[in-house]
Amino acid sequence: MSSASPSTDSSEFNDLAARFSAVPGPQITHPYIGDIALVSTTSIFEQKVRRLLVGDQAPRIVAWPLNRAEPGASGVAVALLGPDLTADSAVAMAAAIDREHPEVCIVLVAERSPDLFEQALRAGARDVISPAISAKGLADAIDRAIENSSRRLSQRAPAPSVGHGRKRLFTVMSPKGGVGKTFVATNLAVALARMTPLDVALVDLDLQFGDVAASLHLMPEHTFIQATRSALAREAAMLKVFLAPHESGLYAMCAPDDPAEADEITDDKSIEIIRQLASSFGTVIVDTAAGLDAHTLASAEISTDLMFVCSVDVASVRALRREIEALDRLGMTYQRRHLVLNRANAPGGARPEDVETAIGLKASLQLPTDPLVLTAANQGLPMVRSDPKSAIAKRFIAYADVLADVEGPKRKGRDHKPALSLPWKRSK
Image (cartoon, rainbow, N blue to C red; front, side, top):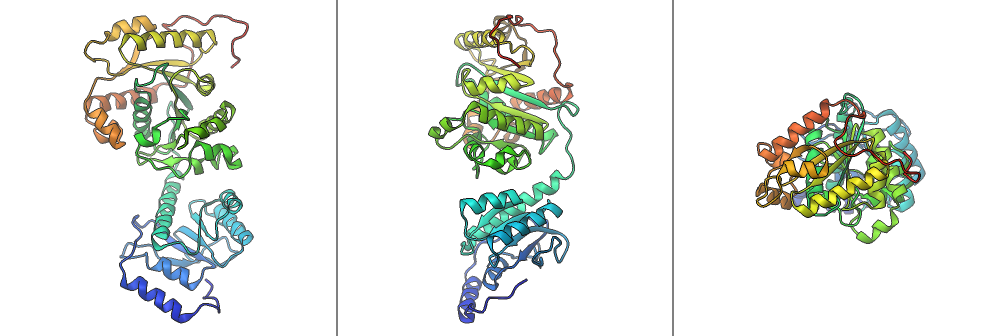
């Protein structure tokens, strides 16, 4: 570990240290999982880090010699590189550490620029922070790094895939809004993640007004737009950088914050990302916008399963019947089909058996009305986590068990009409 540079004024350093000592400041909040290694740091920056480490369970600071892929001590969780490193040296060191110790979360301490940030991510770093970062900003950055390292350690033990090792891609769809697509997609994803944590991805393909992030109470660092703009997203191993982890164990690709940014995302780009997620996760669930836009059709075409969400009012039933007929005409009859009836016992609604007859599908899941659904949605808490003993949560959990026991997709007898053999049907 390097010493302070000759230009560092000792009295300035002592004043800074005294201020840190006198004023209770931010602290690292995550439980201890490993040490923090400093590579080519300065005394002032090291002091900043030390002031955050309070208590017996706080991480230790250890040395990681420059230009070596091995630390000076075992059990390192986070490596802070810099600020006494050139950009090229920091990137090279990050790549060496990531190659030998993929469980370590690497953070570069340097003046951030778009080029350096992209190079750092390619090399395996998780973040780039300024040497002049505030104490609170530094604490938040180290907390994120510790959380990331914890997830990496968990991922080293392979998780079983849903469907006995066969990958599943669900597109959740409906011709009308307000029927509960996002409610179904998020709760089902959380229920599946209970059995296969770190092996479920949830994609918000309602690119203009998607609210997966709000439904899961997530504040993602990156969204779909950053993933499509970055060359890193073309590499499946790097795509997880753009996903938001949820406490249930699933990962979410969230919709852009600005609806105008959705115009940048073509269906080719969105499907490229979904394909890469499907190659990395056992189960991918895609929440779509209402109707059959280009993104929804493209996702449906590559899916193993189509999940139709419908309420029991006549308008929703008629619209869904027309949507299914349109998919039949397009030749999309090879996917497994699931019907979810939301608010199935709503007063004045059609009987579930009448809905099944009109649509031509047996309901795989019927969800009752529950006044707590709105409360949970407003709090960003899926019912499966906020109230696991409720009737709705139990049905999601039981249905997830059924999906997990079903072998990979294969064509079965269907209740709906066969596809028309049309010359212009979409190719698979």
